[in-house]
Image (tube, rainbow, N blue to C red; front, side):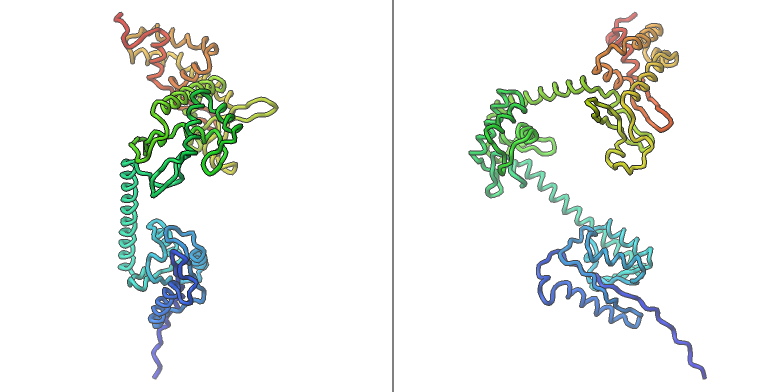
Length: 438
């Protein structure tokens, strides 16, 4: 009588992964990682009849957080999964693998692609079964929900503390030290702060003030030399009048003020005036007619003004933001365009379009306060005077007339702003909303 065929049980190669968030106790003869591994080895031994065998490699991450996957042992584990060396991953507890639902989903996707399952020995979870998958997904979803709730509580507590004027940590500003989690005045530094404000009010110039401070050998917090950025931050800080700024709101602080309100307000006013004048001067000297409206059609990204200097001359360009941020290897077929050339093309199209019969009729029909002939005369009068306008006025008109400029390898497409054409026609004819009836 022949023996019945014995069923061959396939071997399931098991890898144990262990993790501990801190390095505390890892130098002991028997540490947390060893305890995790012992439990996993015992579980694998209990499944010997199912064909489970332990692989010799160890995958232990000591002193690594579960909040991300940047862990050396986990990376080795994933490499062995990809190479087909592992069939089952055994964990002491699910959060040893990851504490992030997003990372968990990515890891499971990688496991599924290679037909790898994993099991949590203390939670009796096994992804080789449908029920195990469902349970694990639910547990991870609740774990992430719990973390997000905790984060929201921390943010709410931080905001509430700021509203009460409390100091919430970080490096104290010049003029203050931290004592018992509160800002207290450092009198020596406070005198430097007062000098900065008074001298800025007297000179009305950050550059002159910086030269004075450098000549005097004055230094900021921790002995660092002053620069323009540090002075601007000091001049704009609400802390010096006993206030705390948080998300655009100002609250009364628990700390003492270093300056009186009048001095602080004077410095802020001068600073605001200087900033407006500086911005105006920059626009006059370096007009960027298409700033904010020109886009790379290939990447669907804005194009920003850029400059280069060669042989003492400045050359202007508009550069695709994808290229500016991604570097030379960015696959963009536009990349950058010469500013002068593209501005000339755009203005040529604008001047042609606004004087076309279709645009004139549409503008006239949209506003019955202007005669069709007046609309035509007004829009056509712009053409001969354009070159005589100051750069700032040219830029204002471009922003008024053009909503978007799309640049592609095949050409340039200008999108007019209908309401802007109406406004321009009114301005050129001296017509206002209060135009007297005809």
